[in-house]
Image (cartoon, rainbow, N blue to C red; front, side, top):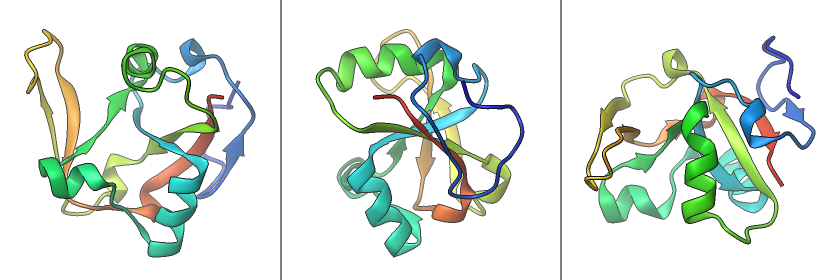
Length: 123
């Protein structure tokens, strides 16, 4: 399990159980390949930002459900733990756009790669 201390940008934890994530922390899920591209470009800017106008995020307590619904069978999945204070002017809104009965955090703009507190290997 990842320690609760901030180990600095780019710190990577070993594989953790989904339920071991900080339940109130903010995460964006990405493959290791996507994370490498985000680091090279200096920002988290997935295709969803252009297609939908926002970046999908989850709080730690939501990650198990998000993984089950959207990432079944995925390999090399990372949880990028985000520091909302380091996101600059990126708007972060909790909303239920898909009428699921649960609000999820959406980031309205590219997230600086430096806002990633830790990368946590899920599988």
